[in-house]
Structures are given as structure tokens and as C-alpha cells.
Length: 490
Image (tube, rainbow, N blue to C red):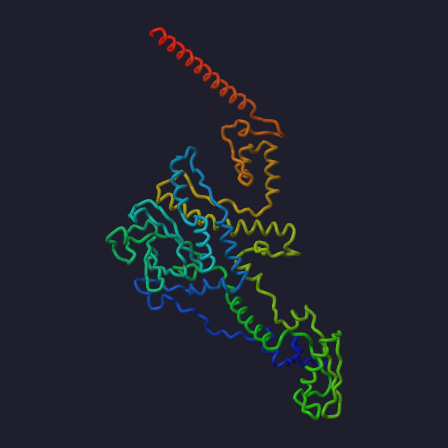
């Protein structure tokens, strides 16, 4: 028998000619331009450089594919969303410097982590991310008082590489590179007042050898796949709206002409099939075999076979498997980070290996790049070199495993109770006590190996308590003598 078409859930017959227009393996995607008009069109003057791709269209790709969107925001969140710490770079750092930096970061709204996260969403989407640095009173050499995110799709690079222009509607604003050795106004001229002075920026770019001024996102190699999915989805939706879900395959044997009438009323075999299938849906069977007399006197055998779920996916191909793996590979994100359960090769130890690869090859290098940006602001903006900004490590592992490992280190005398508290206490509301000698000591299987230090510390504290008792006793004696002297004089 030869397949001639399908019957759908609406009882409609779709022949092979129509089917071939919708089948993915036969359909050619219409690749007409879908460009969004460049808001900078006609404004590339003053040395501004045209980007290799429409940045607004790249930004809009987040709306095209859920896996692309989730991968972008997951990486950005894993890099920036874990908090931060200020770590000393010398043995005896200045605590006042730390307080100044904490005050600066605390004033950033909504938060330094959220500002960085937004910049990283831009970076992963357009290949470019920008941070704005605002100085006190807009003074040329004022200390930084603010940090903000500049949406990358609104920015164009200058040929000098030391300034950028942002355009929103009819407004055009300039920024200069952080600590660049020149003065600049927001109008790309010499500033007459502090209020006219341009704020500064630092940028993060995904390097690509084809462009000297802009970064290009890593997923650019799969963007045609994303556009192809959009076109295919549109065609699939059109088919389902017009015909319904594929329900049965129709095959025939014999002399067959679908347009030839099979009765005096002029009904064709297609009319007969649709009518019979509506009845078949009310009393379904696995296979329906019909024998229809043809106009030539012979018989035409028609077989109608219901399509199972697997057949709908594989044979009909209307719901083609998503290009998820290809998109996630472009971003370097393992499926489980998006909440996608994987079996087989991604289970067990392989999942742990992919976690470690993701952390080491994607997250930590990005953290280091952003940390370098912020530490440049600390060094050059505040003149502080004894403290540095660091993101908290991404928590990809089970805390129970971490605690088990830390406990093993503790039992072998490698770490102290205070070090345990510093790493795990925050989640349990426990603070380290640097003045407690017991918490600063090392233990092997519960026995302190710094016993002499503890005894010495306790003796010093005891001596201090004795000194305080003696001083208090002496003070009481002096008060008693003075009181007696006053009584005697009276």
C-alpha cells in the first residue's frame, strides 16, 4: 500500500502535497530580512563605529527561545548573584579603608550584585556590557559615589576606544573611559561646569577576531537555528489551526484517483474518508480497512492506521525536537542548571564532572573579569590597595558534602572551629568569635593540639582579672580614706 495522506483530529483529510509544505524535512525556511531598524541609523557621525550586528535585535533574541533566555540569566546569576566579600591584600590592612568601601557598595541601588547581573545579561546577549561610574559632585578627580548599568543595545563605540555614545530617542549622551587622561562633557565637548561633565564607564566585551570595537556573543553560531525554530513554529501553528492534530495515516492499494467521484451524488473518496473517520472516532479501533469501488470497476482498498504519540513526533515531525542542546552548548550551560532532568550519560559522576567544568570554565573566568573591573575602581578611584573585591564562590554542590569534607579537615587539625563558622555559620546564624582561644585552636579527633596556647591565653586573662580586682580594691581603699578625712574635717 502507498501512503496518500493523513486524517486529522477534526476529521479532515490532508493529502501528501499539502503535507510536504509543512513537513520539516521538506520545508525551506523563508529567509527574508527580519531586521529591526537601527536606532542609530543616520547618526554614525563624530567617529562612532557601526556594530557588526544589530544590537537591539540581539537583545530581542531573549524573547525567541526559552532555553536561550534561561541560559543567559542563569550564567549572569551564578556569576553575580552569590554576594561578595572584601578581602585584605596585605597582612595588616587599614580597617577605615574597608569601611569606606562598604559605605560605597551599600549606597549602590538596587545592589552591586544586581547591577553586575544586568551588565552580564547584556554581555551574554549582545557581547558587550557596560558599567557607569559616577564621581562625587561630577568632579574630574572626585571619588566614586555611584555605580550603574548602561544598557548595551543603546551604546555605540567611538573609534578612539576611549568614549562611547548612548542614544535614547532624540537624546544623545557621551561617556568617557574610566580615568582616561582628558576631560569630556555629555555633549562631546569641553565641559563648562561639573554638571556638564560626562560620567565614566568600564566595559566587558566577548572578544571576536572579526571586530576591533565590539564584542560578539558566543551563541551567534546558533542564531540561525533560533530563527529557524520561529519560522517552523509559525508553520506548525498554521497547520494545526487549519487542520487539527494528525490522527491517522491513510494508505491505499489499487487504481486510485482522489478527485474521481465514487457515487452518483459526486462524492469523492476524500469525502467518504472524512465521513467514515468521524464515525471511527466515536468507536475507535486500531485499524480501519475500507473497500471502495472505483469508477473503472476495480476495487480500491483503503487502510486507516491511528498515529501513536511517538509516530506523531517522528513520522509527522510537526513537533520537532527542540534545539535545546545546541543552544545550551553555545552557552556552556549544563541542562540541570535550568531545571532540566537528564538521564543516561548526564547522570551520576558525569553530572558532577559537568558541574565542575561549568564552574571552572564559565563562571570563575567571568567572575575574575568582573572582579578586575571593580578592583580597578577601588584602586584608581579610591586609591585603596589593601582591600579587594571578590564574589562569593558559586554554590553548586550539596552543602552536606561540603560539611562532611570540612568536618574531615577539622578532625585532622587542618582548620579551626572559627574557620568552620566563617564558611558555614552564616546559613545557621552563627558568628565567629576571634577572641575565644578554644575556637581559634586546632583539634585532632576532638583533642586540642594548641593546648599550650589555650593555657597561656587563659593565664593572661586570669592575670588581667587579678589586676582588675587589685585596682578595684585599691580604689575602694582610697574612697574609704577620703570619706573618713571628710568626716574628720567636719
